[in-house]
Length: 172
Image (tube, rainbow, N blue to C red; front, side):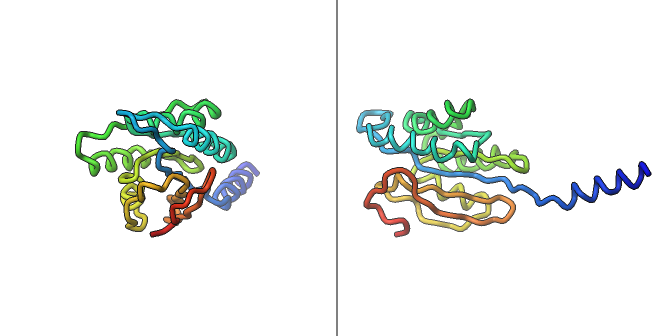
């Protein structure tokens, strides 16, 4: 009887659908113009919109660059979920190394975990490609409302908008 119960339990566990890891990628929100800029009021509102959107998704990993604008964009989500963002600095002039470091950290996600990556116009789409996704052009400078959902197991990408839409086209 014990063997039958153990076999049944194992069968039930194996029959459960695998919950895929998901990586949510966004470019930082609207920034001001000073050196190492923070967010404008519109950017602060967008960052809060991101937190509201991701509350149910509940990322367990949040990655940013060293730039204040990425950290400020991630801050409301981190505060709402009690997750400490991890800063992955961009080596001077070396975006490929930064993207590789991000991909390695994302490779540690366990089934069912979700990560949020707040990047830049020239890091979001290269990271998608580094994870096995399609090669997409860098984001235009006007793109702040795009949100990319990369399903690791299915190798599928969804592109959405969040927050207040701006006039930037979804695909150029």
